[in-house]
Amino acid sequence: MQNTPINPDTFSAELYRAVDNKDLNSLAHLLSDDIEFRIANFPLVKGKSAVIEANKQFFESITRMQHTLVDSYLKNGDIFCHGSVDYVRLDGTTHHAYFSTLLKFKQNKIQQYLVFADISQL
Image (cartoon, rainbow, N blue to C red; front, side):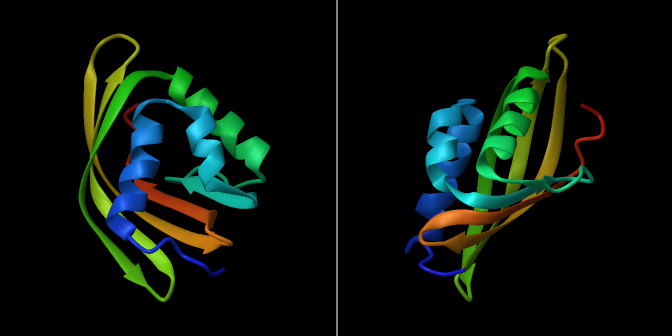
C-alpha cells in the first residue's frame, strides 16, 4: 500500500463530500479494484463493485447525512480522520454519531477503508 495522496485533509474532504452527496460514481473513482471496506460491526466487503453496492444499499436506507471532519492525519502512508456525522432517517428523525476512519492506499486509490462508528441506532 503506497502512493498516498499528499494532503490528508483534502483527500478526506473529497471522500466525505462524495459520501454525503451519495455520489457513487465519485466514490468509485477513489477506490482500488481490490478494496476492502468495513463500517462498524458489519462484515468486511471485498472488491469495488461489492463495496459500491453496499454503499448504495446504505445510502438508500437514509434520507441524508452530513459529515463534519475534525482532523486528518498522515502516518506511514495511511490517512486517519475523525469527526461527527448527522443522519436523517427515512422517517425524518435524526441521529448523531462520532466516527474514525482508516484509509490505506494502493496506487493513489483506497485499498482499505475501515470506518469505526456506532450506527446501531439507524
